[in-house]
Image (cartoon, rainbow, N blue to C red; front, side, top):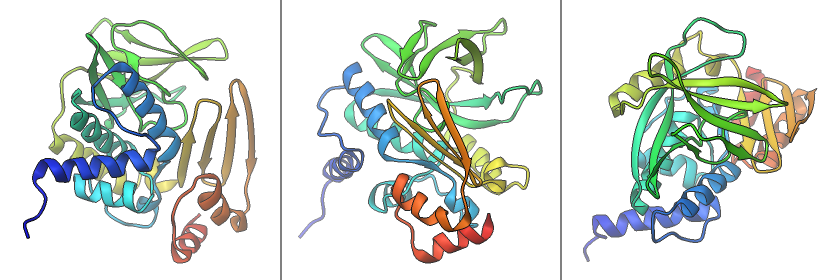
Length: 272
């Protein structure tokens, strides 16, 4: 008996991905499909750095990503999330380019390294910034790359152009616009993300090495855990409180829906 062909194997993996994110199917690369799949991915695959906190390497090959994010029902951070999403979009028939971005934290003037991955996706004769891997403040839907404002359920987003041609994703929240990250439209290669991923997952100064981060975003609510600070955002309203160590396991497996062993949960509690 021979094994499945490459196309059959790809379809099998795509069907598993659809099941993971609660999406029925897609036969054509339309904007409606792109928007729906973007939202489903965010709702069902949490942003998290648990393996980094457990001292495990972060693999970006598609086989490893499918094993972790799809079959094991875990999450990941930007390189994992957007690599998987790009593969799913490509399998549907979208034209996708992978781009590097510099995060712009509020109140920070110095440029940051290119440690974020985003996607440019063609749909219905327009290009769209697509990003399922930014976490708590990221767009819930694709944003036009032509500068048009995208009104979304938790605020507005637009891609602005600076004098040097750099693109900047901006978000309006509580009436004020702020920068999220800057990027160019020059496609990056897998080796570029391998270097950035190594820094992000191993360097002592990386926020993902220092702080447990788990986030889950939907159209009506965002849940954000950083260290022991737990925030729930609903529109412009925000509730924040500190959780106790004993509450961490049920929060991770319940509110965030992560499939973790008792040993992993206890190690996360001890690591703070």
